Image 1 (cartoon, rainbow, N blue to C red):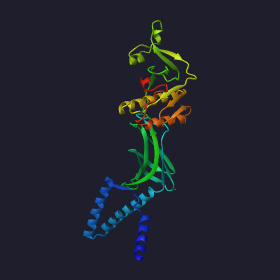
Image 2 (image 1 turned 135 degrees about the vertical axis):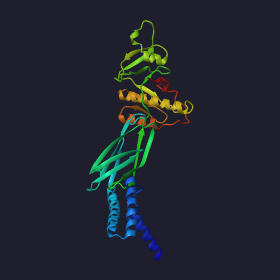
Image 3 (image 1 turned 60 degrees about the vertical axis):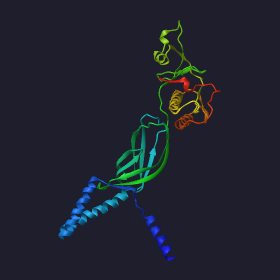
Image 4 (image 1 turned 30 degrees about the vertical axis):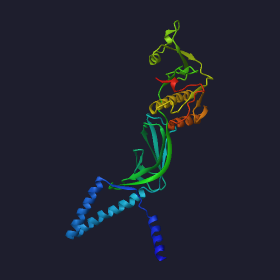
Length: 325
């Protein structure tokens, strides 16, 4: 009975005094300092010289002071990570790390490692914010469960590291490129201008007698035949964008191209304030707000091929009607 009580007391004691760091790395300066300590200690014990003993004791006490200050320096710091609402694959974006000091004591030389990059803070008084640019190659839903916070304060002998749980989630939307819509297999012939001014035009076959100045040579070269641009009024126009993710239609590579095309058209329609309906196997909604747009893009960011039947009965713009410029 007494033995079990002692074991409980020991477990309680050690649980309250856990090792404060997940990792400690010795620096070059630290290695040199320890070598000096070893030499001083060896000289002191072999010579019996009081002065060398005193120097060795002072040097050794500095190690203890360093450990005490280091523990206090990484204590009571709150970490927040801020992600933009819109992050697109293969496009540079900025992510912010926000530190809040919960003590009156200033903090020094703090580093936060996030997604392979280091955010460096020389001084943290009450709060501080740092930005770093990131470029994500792949679309998808990303989850960050923890970050590493470290410091080499005060003397730079050791880098002490702690892990903090943050449990953050963000989405990387598909890559966005300039697109236009062809009439192939589509009842909608309007498409978007290349100059991003929000107007629309229809693309039609060139016929004799039409104004040759309306020929779009760039699109004609893309499609292999002469095409004429006709300006049109887009007000009140409702587009229907249909997205399929059936394994019967795509392999992996062609599916990724279809995702990019659909995301690019969705981006263009929304930012040019054009009404459109988005239809897929999982969601069907009219994009009328920013939240609707984010819902569509989040869906496209993590969608995969599935065993389902292609959507064929509904007319609209599919990946076959979208071409990259």
